[in-house]
Image (cartoon, rainbow, N blue to C red; front, side, top):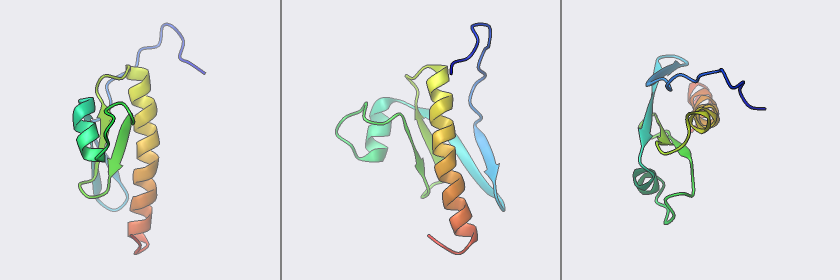
Length: 91
């Protein structure tokens, strides 16, 4: 299910506030930087990642805007899950 041809996607948010005062930064990074964050050998292995250590979502800046949004929502789900666990006293 794609977007209509006339639809234009906005930029990703730079910051998302979740739960009880959690601020999640969203950063577009080069594939090589994403590779370093993930400690992977292949720079094109992942489109993005969520880091609970620094409350950042990292997304490959070479992806199309559509793919960036898809990756953002995927990683945001991980962030929401982890923050919900923290609020319950887990992780």
